[in-house]
Length: 454
Image (cartoon, rainbow, N blue to C red):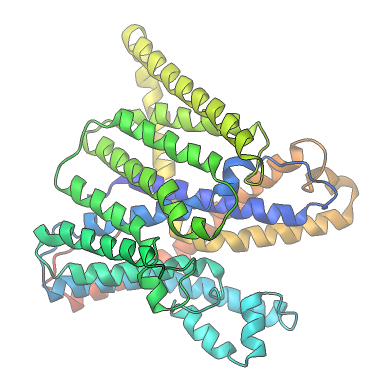
């Protein structure tokens, strides 16, 4: 059974990362003398938390898709084959594009630190091999987004070994795994970046996969509560932490983001999965209203992670209050509408279901969006710089122009570009590769139980 609500959440996670990078790249296009905050500041300056949500969702999905897999080598082989062929084809396509960019457009300038170091040390080939196979190294991969896929592959490898155990022992194995990571951190062994296999193995971010896996075990076992209020609370908690997150430090790269986003992310995954299990996805309406109101009120304050903590805390309190009021208002209007205007309420069902399906489709493209959006935004930045040089008609649309027209145009272009990149990657690379390797998996592992790719 495919959980469409989890796909929706994947799409949200991907868009958080998209607008986080859009915010960072937008700053590069604005004249330093024009420091007026843009609309993409605020919570989007902490949009890297979409990666943390991705990690929790990945842990959940690994347990969900293997819930009927019998312990044994055949099941483990099919699982690993499915995961590896899910990750590498699209990654190779995206990394290949990045390599072509550096080889034919960027070099010999080599402004990227990893490329510069590889060229100076004469080990560009080794750097590329490790990048394409997602092996840890001191530098980020040729397409920097690939650092997250290293964590994904590590989790898949260890989780595959755990599938050899009886299903009843899986919770204890996950707890032992998490305990080992906590112990390594207490001994001072963990590092902000996974620069080798050891630092990858004990990196605190693995805890987010484990959180998701534990949620997957709970939901798979049928322990799902009627969790509307829990989902609302988790969504507001996650959004509040987007508001409160300050400057990125070494602590943020390790336990900071795990505690700030991994825990509420796990509760959010549990709540949304439980809502779908109980057929109560209508709760997503007040949850969405709460998140939008919370984010909008915080955005109006024009704050960034470098703003004073007191200012961010005060703005966050107002934002949470607005979110709670918005959720309460939607719930109240829904109750009144159901009591006095039931026909109107039923009439709203179709457009809401259409929005849900659209969000689920974005979730289907989320991996392609994640890897492809940086090319779309990069192309947009080139276009913006060209427009800035032309002057005249283009001036109102160049970031940094007076008013909000430039911000709205930039946000719309980023959103459309990211969706087009995701749709293109999904149709041209991801979906054909999935179909091909699904057929091969059935032939290579005929005795393993079939699970749906998610």
